[in-house]
Picture (tube, rainbow, N blue to C red):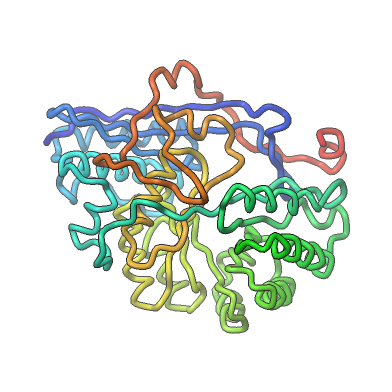
Length: 399
């Protein structure tokens, strides 16, 4: 099956003011999407979403570059996709989109869902059939302002619990220095949040993502209290390059310390794995591709480290990450962005069934989904950054 064409769809949608979200010192004003489409001489087409953090226009340029090398190659040959190299985010996101689109083609050619194909090829250690219902956790907690209404995050968590999700991941709010937020003030909110979800009587896990914003001195007491409260993990508490700090945190608490969403190669993960920095790794197939994510997973498993992939942006990327999770020997969760807006599922012809916190994988080959018609005309790409820096006074005016 020969590749005949590669192209990239670059899409955008401005957020309505009420759908703009904010955290730390920036607010997000639009949703972006980059989708790689690969065509073959047998009429089989593959689709894969590349992480838009690589920049849709830059991703499109890299896909066009690889078109010269890949047209005429065998789409079913595992050696066909290029490899990420971690020196360029736009390059590696483009490679990830190509890789996911090729796995979509391989699944269609084999008449199997990608998850089951991965299991049947022995690329994971899973002995049972792939999952067809993948547990999701609600990922957000990005719009609570320490001055205006920090308890908004509690309202949000209770809403996700009521909608049947089994867990939520939240962030640490607006820039702490604006409002003199201390570790203790933050932990007071976390205790109140924990009490509120416990009072529902339903099992509901809480995870915290600090987005590398804390010092080790701040992160340790937070980790210890989250441990006591039963949070299910603590993600990227300190700057990623501080391996020694991660190792000390991981050794000091029982709560899993997690990270690695920006890493696109096994080589990048190796130092953190060898240094006992992570209890859970979080590669994202929209950043590194399914092929590289499998390599990372195998290396992590050899060290007793589990996998919960990072997953942000739109529905096609969610499907690829969900198939990856469904093929794992010990699947835990797939992340679901709750604040991407309508573009998230508008890119697909049919939204998959999501109920009670489970994503039902379609019983179709490949990734199991098709692109909606006319999305390039309906959501033309809008140049410019998805996130705008703000000052404290700007935030007060906007919210």
